[in-house]
Length: 290
Image (cartoon, rainbow, N blue to C red; front, side):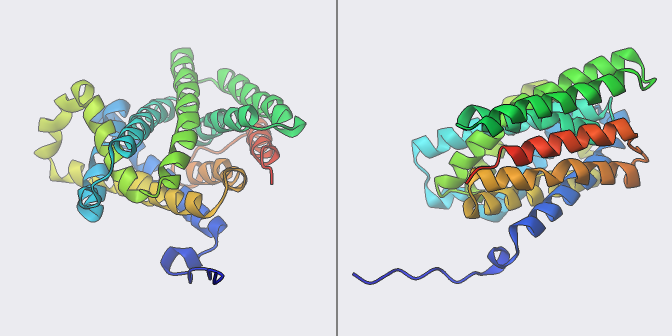
């Protein structure tokens, strides 16, 4: 029997995975910085929903996943993935409406770290929970003493932890969607399902948005930068790499978010916050296994 040869690298496959991840992080958090400016007009949860709606429209128009005639099991998996993804985005936007971007992103990573620890078998994965927990506690403590209104802090912390829980689901379900071979097509279907599930809660904003071309354009920028580009790149990277290596690359994102927050939103991190970010990134690296 002939030995199969490797498929030649084409397109994004030629780009190193770490480079793809840096681009993913920069575009995602740049989009989040733009979204913050829209919160006063629409509210953070509605902006999060519109991000999913417009991203779904772009992906459906591009991929036209119905041509593949996906099976029922594939559709159910993509739908579950999309609902979790939409919930994660809405919770994340609520959080960054009350807390600095870098702090929220770091706290979100508690979710993926817990997934790695639960699925892992070694002491490093277990210890990673303690390290990440220490970083999150430090960030929470610094935030509580930061002078921000107590109500903002409590809402922001609760939303960030909810986003962490949904991100854990995103990692697990996203790997299944990528492994099923549907990839970006499954992402398009999932986003459409997620948008429909949350439409009863945020659909009232549709009349306001559709009559304001400028607002619609900014929302489209948010959707493309924060959902289409990073999640497409996530599917590419997840297809090429294992979950462990993916976790190591995730460690780049807290620092990326802190840089974007500092440059775009003028949210300069304090030294205790930098230590908290470093602890969370270190925990992510600790969860990596061969």
